[in-house]
Image (cartoon, rainbow, N blue to C red):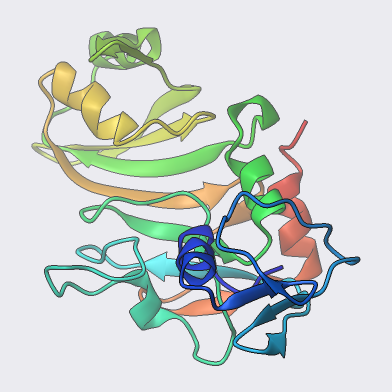
Length: 227
């Protein structure tokens, strides 16, 4: 219903702060019928929140979590206050940057993340090497790491300097630290990793650390990759 995260909801329920049709239920697995059952938190009826879809240009060094035990900045430090609960659609690791979607529509988020939906995620990656066809071919072939077969949908060189190259890498799946793990297995150091597009939605000129709501057309451009 867009009130809070699943973990927060489970905590509220186990604490006895949630009533379902007037009765306290402490089991988060108790079934409920959205739109039919009455759900209250601390005596206040919860109604479905208006669906919200946002994009953030995540800076490097920021963690994709609601809170951090080490006191590091999180993506929630950059979200406009007063928008209610929003959850990241997938993650970018601390050292990565770029386009991150946030929403209170968990069903939509699941469709965007589902690899069978074939929503491409595009990354620009600076590596501490000069790319050649052998490296690009090895990336296309994929690597095995910890039992996972890590593959990309596509890769090409964007530009190069004297000692490094920028690659464009496209993924359909989203295994943890997938690009970094592939390049590490191939002995290539990643200098920067920036997600620049999800589906047909590009990061554009959104300033680092800034966020804004998606237009209807932009939301549709994300969904254009869904099966």
